[in-house]
Image (cartoon, rainbow, N blue to C red):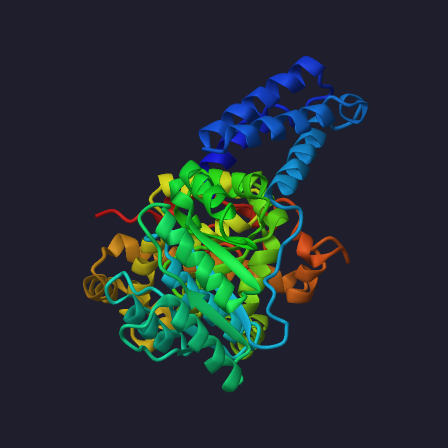
Length: 484
């Protein structure tokens, strides 16, 4: 998400950081490079022009040119402008109304509308504790209604029974009545899409909106279509009373042009983003957090939220007690790997931690990936319970057996053992420093924990075990390379 744009902008700002003074010419030169980076990210030209003009006007002010840290001031100004362009504040969906709250999903065919409807239903049911009903109004695409019914079973959300031959407006009317009579809090209407914007599509949208009187009309667009996604949004805005946008496939969009253009072009906020194929891969959109990711500042708040959702409190307490006593075996290492996968994998974690953009690129270059972590898991699973508890007993014969059982090599088994030894040593050092409480005190000495650890220090588990260098800094990832 935003990788290419983030890389380009950070190249610009690296030239400014640490400079004692900046002339107006240097600031304007940096802003020209920012302009090129935004255009290459497929941001709409009017949005780029307004953004650069706004940032330049602020950056050449006296507070920057006379600042002690002018380079950092320019970065802050660009960050503020990014937040403003993306929408300033997170926009929530309106569901706390007299039930049922009707949410109408619109968009072109192939944008991921039906899957997004199911994702949103799951989000509302699990995170907001709402009783949700879904209804498919797509009578054009073959098996579209059956698809939503199957997704409803997967996310454990009720779907309106299918009556063949009914028209979209009749289905919408029946769905609203059913939701009202059966006490549903939210009704999600998945409308039909087309391969392009046409009069028939718009007329159908208007008729359904008039029948169902929705609180929210959410436009689902594919972020990978870039500039075209913005054009589609502008077309829908003219005919349907849009209240917000959902951008799908953001995990595959390295440029981010659609996200940066959408708010300014349509005037409507981005409310959710799709971050993967799984049905729980839907996140509320936070402009300030997105701006932090773009500028390489990370997104520690989202990382903490994701950790809170995925980490079992009881398991975490057992792990903490075990570490406090000095125990850290292969089973614990396996648990660390699995926890990292639950939180989205190596790439997601690296993108959310401040300053790890370059480390992430180095990891990719060295062949470190989620697949690599899977290989390491396989090695541990090929060990007996006794070997996991006491890895020091692994002799040459045992290592050969484990390598054959996991489809790896003895060298890779040795690398894993070294990684475990390094992690165990780090735990012993932590104990000598005062344990977990002492580590917590390093997060700024009472400062806001959401601000994250100070530069050069990361808590255990923030990176995969073995990736930390001296003092917790990201070390060279070469030890992870698995050769075939």
